Length: 111
Image 1 (cartoon, rainbow, N blue to C red):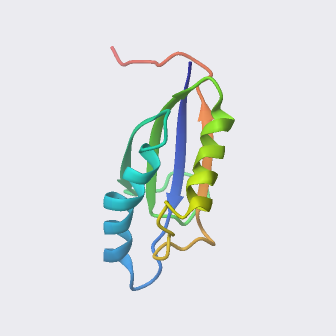
Image 2 (cartoon, rainbow, N blue to C red):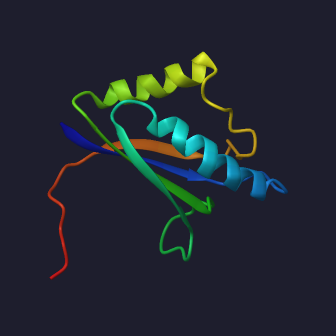
């Protein structure tokens, strides 16, 4: 099975930061990881920019394993279409970036 990472760069709508964080952590992450193949997820807050023009302040990384990564994306679409995924009403969708990656090299550890 291929190891996959789904990454999402996000920004809350102005004035909706508290609602955004509550929805993302307590509703959205559990909904996504309920999809077979997803193993877990974690959110991160931007500390410093090093390169690039992306303005999103938050990152979520979802871990998954699948023989068919496209099926993971299809399952996410089905969840959204079924009404079982809570809409991202507190998220600025104009700035959102999401992408699915599969591993292409071995994990490199320090020391």
